[in-house]
Length: 63
Image 1 (cartoon, rainbow, N blue to C red):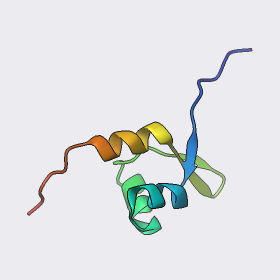
Image 2 (image 1 turned 60 degrees about the vertical axis):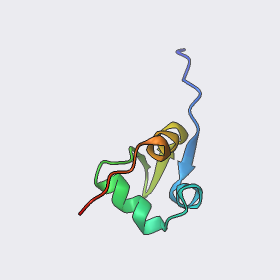
Image 3 (image 1 turned 90 degrees about the horizontal axis):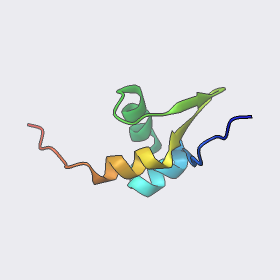
Image 4 (image 1 turned 90 degrees about the vertical axis):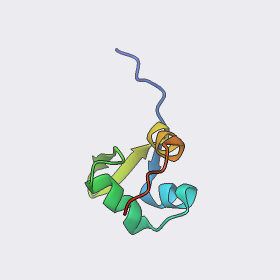
C-alpha cells in the first residue's frame, strides 16, 4: 500500500481562529480559490500548509 504524506487538515473554525478572521471570510477565501481546501461531505478541510503559505504571502493594497 502506498504511503500517504503527513498532511494535517484544519477545520474552517480552526483556520478562522489562526488567521483571526470570521468563518465566513474563510469560506469566501475557499470559494474564491485563494485558499485550497478539500470537501469531506458537507464540510471543508484546509491543509495546514496552505494556511501557513497564505499568512506568509505579501499583502496587496486594493483600492
